[in-house]
Amino acid sequence: MNESKRSDGRQWRKQYRSGAMGSPRHLTRNDYDTLDGIRRHVTTLAGLNAVIDARRSAHYDRQEELIEVWLFGRMRSDSFGNAMIASGALIPGELFPDIPSVLTNPGMSRFLMSKGLDRESIWITTGMGGSGTFTVARPFEACAVCGKTWDIGDCFDCIANHEDFTVPVDRRFYGKTLADLRVHLHQNGAGRLHPEAPIQNDCYIDLRPNPRHPTLRMNEGGWPRDLAPDYVIRKGDRMFLYRWTFEHPPCRTKRIAAQMERYFHDLIAKAGFDMGQTQWLAIPNGRAPETEHYNGPWFRVMTEVGELTIGWRKRVIHLGWGTDKDLSHLFLGEQTTVAADHVHAWGEDKATDYLTRIRRQLAAA
Image 1 (cartoon, one colour):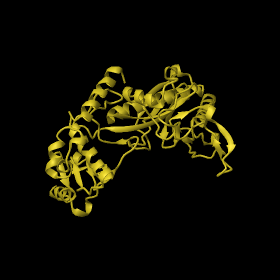
Image 2: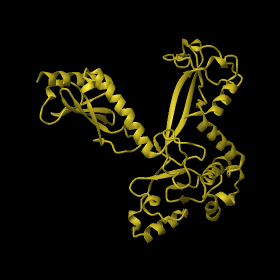
Image 3: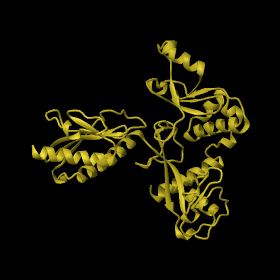
Image 4: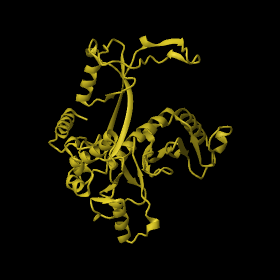
């Protein structure tokens, strides 16, 4: 994301937290725990987020018991303030555009029955989300792919992705404190330091046996615990960061498709195929539906020795070569699924090996 988009995001955050856009700190219980109050505030994306945050804080900070409500037929907020996104076959907000913005649980049942659903068939699956799942967009976030923000009309068409990564601390922070580093990262949107183990350095590796657990080492990885805010950054420090990014579902599909095409392109090249003679066609994934576990489309690849099919099938890579040739004998003894027209490879090394066998066999035929 470019610097202008980061600046826009920081400005949105300041406005939201200051209350200019409607902040959870400025809402009363009448605002977040009555139907009329909630209805007044969820007309904007900032207001919707303020209600969600205020309800969560009301229970977990003050132990308030809340009414359960449905918002836009897309999200249920329970009595603990947890926000859960509807998924599966019955998502009322997608099926019925005229659904009220706020409903109680009984109100939702009455609305669905008015649409012809019988009580026994009303079962709405909800989940609290996580990496790769649908969430409610924040007013200050932009899509990591296209750079566009969300509004109240499309705020549920948003997928959250969580990423953990470790990178060296830039030398300009040597001599500064952990608190200084946290502030810089927060302001620049590069990520957030892990709360329990933010720093790694090989100088902290301690291979002595742990007195309480003799089979373990004192600090095998070099991750000091319980670092104080005034910890001074030193040469060799690496920081353990996490960040959330958000995408529109179509943007996510395009991103994954492009990533997978590059990945399989490299895989086939490593197996010795003449890449100048390959032609690629994306086809639907033959196994996994487009959910949070979606690993992109499969690809039909025309090579110098014939047509192949390649793609992820959950945890394995599907490699197919058509029904006109039985190559199953190439994989005798392999602990994997083998059929006359395909084989499953567990990981990149196995996929490269199997593709090499397939190429040589088809070239010799």
